[in-house]
Length: 163
Image 1 (cartoon, one colour):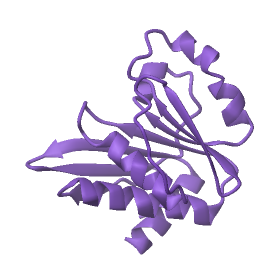
Image 2 (cartoon, rainbow, N blue to C red):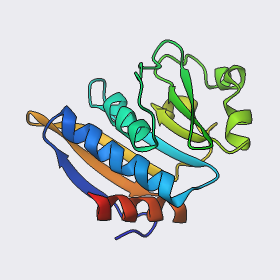
Image 3 (cartoon, one colour):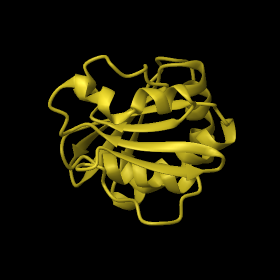
């Protein structure tokens, strides 16, 4: 466990469990202090991606409201000396629209990005460090977490130790 490509599955019986998983992931990202970090959040509508992102932001130290970026596409947060971008690409009509968001510049400057619907970018985003797939499972959700880089593996290992 903890090597890039080694997936871990966790049941999430309710929204509180989804937020709690996000919170330990955010705390692990903060503890590992990566200069930049790319978290991809995948799943159908209503699978809990935004709820997980809210938990990650709480784990990174955010204490306020976290609106869904469905219409704004990007919600920036300044936390713990880092820029955190909560990105929702669901409404992206063309991957070239990413250029207008200034996302590449922010990521190049070392932002932590939580990206919902990364598949809408059609390969125009940096690779994920950690990918979380959420799916409906009975009355709850199932999270499949897969590290895709050494820092992603370290964050996942720390998060699992905290959970």
